[in-house]
Length: 175
Image (tube, rainbow, N blue to C red; front, top):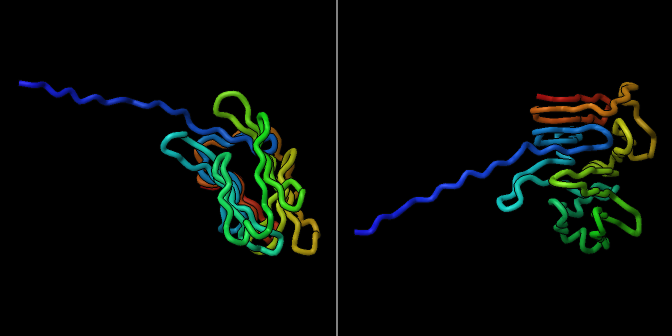
């Protein structure tokens, strides 16, 4: 008589923590959203645990690629445009026509830091550098996001970290 032993393993994973500019988002699935379009999301990958997902749009709104973690998946339009992803020591850079579109800086452990300059499907430009995101309309005019300076904040367990609207409204820690 044979005895079968069923082996069960528990896998412990910490909540993902993502730093965008100087702000940290813990267990927040959508870090940055424009209108109803997620621009920086945290997704679960079977073998890796958690990673980021970022759609890349051209300034004319053309969907060029999706970046998932350190991998880029070009669309047909993206391949035609010459979108390039480079992996260097502790940094992944996505470039279009020799200009950096975004960077993911890898830190120790599971941490990473994102600096983003992203276009939206309607051509609006969003830049996230040192504190609050900046939004520019298609003519390059800066839109006021309420005069808020948000630095070194931590958002936990919300559905959306920062939601920006084309009229300059903004939501933070959206449930």
